[in-house]
Image 1 (cartoon, one colour):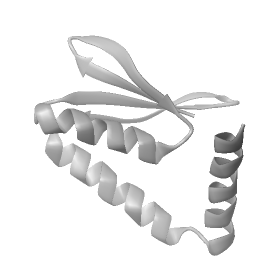
Image 2: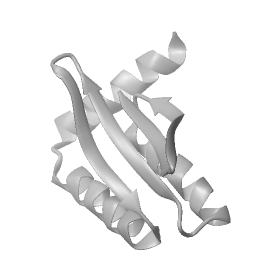
Image 3: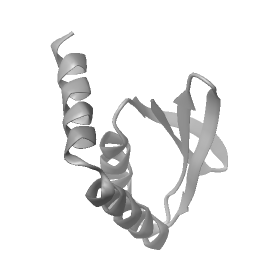
Length: 93
């Protein structure tokens, strides 16, 4: 599960999602109105919360998206299918 916070002054949670793509889309929506937006991304796992990254501006957002896309390319077909099936299960609940 991913949690997205704005990081301008005070932190405020603006999205929580199982999908990292949802978090990326939310940041993109914010950048449409504020190119200087700042974000904090936390990944929650059973073993605790892990800092995924700080995004400070559109350049870092672009880099984050590129890294995300590279990770997708490195996944095997089985891993991608497993990810898709988990998303389908969540949507049908």
